Length: 463
Ligand SMILES: NC(=O)c1ccc[n+]([C@@H]2O[C@H](COP(=O)([O-])OP(=O)(O)OC[C@H]3O[C@@H](n4cnc5c(N)ncnc54)[C@H](O)[C@@H]3O)[C@@H](O)[C@H]2O)c1
Image (cartoon, rainbow, N blue to C red; front, top):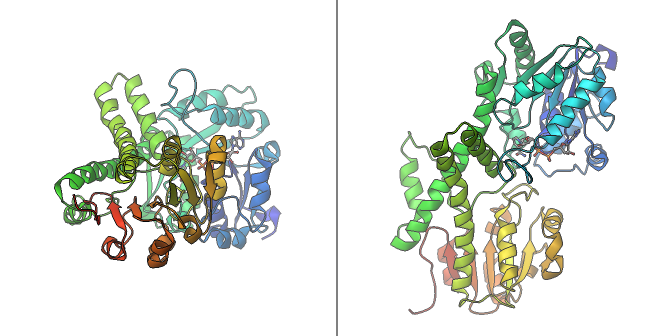
């Protein structure tokens, strides 16, 4: 299809973990549309044009290659592409605000507002603006006010289309989503714009999985989905603490309750805690919104999900220190995994950041290993770089270490030769499995003192 015959020009502002993969999927599935992704970060845009994409995501390069140069383009010319676009997805970051009113809770909407003003300035025709970023409920109202403050007579329709992909499985999540949610104003104009977005996804997503709603329900549903997911993790993690005291096994409890179809078996793995750029940020956002409407009990209820996560991270460090005879000072400790989950290089809010910092405060010699996240780990620890070291090879990381802590559930760590690792370590050797992915009985037989989440430890010491 030649560029002039494209049915629509679709633009995405923000070429990150969401903007890049979502637009690559739309482009791959809809050759009739021209898709352009723009960003203020020229390095990111340059990387999207190579085979070394700026984010690690299994299967993504193949999808990008299907469409890149055909109907998928990356650019830093934001204004020109705004002007040409019929539909603009906005997928810029919405981190937690770090200053002023609502600091530490509400979303920092400065990138959003700047984008809205860029759109307003560069537009000279009607457009549909799609909220792809996760936003506080009722952001669309503010956006409408900014965009309709124009004297050019241009009409903008605002659509909420939150993204539910998970890093590490983004390609599959986009290819076969549980649902796509599209919210709009329920006016004649709004419903027409909603249909245009439905028509994009209908190219590959079955109709019954495309859900439509009013715009506020759509905005709120994204925050609530993340709050519920994180709540399950905090719930099972709270029980893991109790299991460690009572000789119950959290995996057995999770299995037993998960067989109840009302509860379901997914997202019940106890761990060192959840990370990622979204869960904490989105819950705190929900908390702030509830508080701002005077719903203090609602706010407190959800805030506890974040507190329980912090408690789980603290508890993990405390367990390590206590097991290592109440001091980790000068001890070599190998961290297996730094990414917040497997199959991504993303380390935003990773429990490993807190755990590393705490162990360094205790003067441990921390060695960080991860197959994809070392570059990001170095940025996260920029202020203490001289106090940690990095070693991609887990065998070398563990050599002469007192202990290993598994912090990311990479498959790689399940298949290592732990006999060889044990032989190379100082004795007594410890392993702290923060993801419950290792065969603890086998490790114990090899000679390790094994600490799992939600199970009493297996140690070779007589109390
Ligand atoms: N990462 C996830 O798994 C995930 C999943 C669902 C939803 N979300 C939401 O999607 C949004 C984006 O998240 P992300 O992880 O892709 O963030 P990201 O930081 O990876 O990407 C955002 C990009 O926007 C660019 N940007 C910022 N301001 C800009 C501007 N004015 N003009 C052009 N580009 C600009 C940044 O340079 C950056 O490359 C957030 O609201 C997030 O909550 C993220």
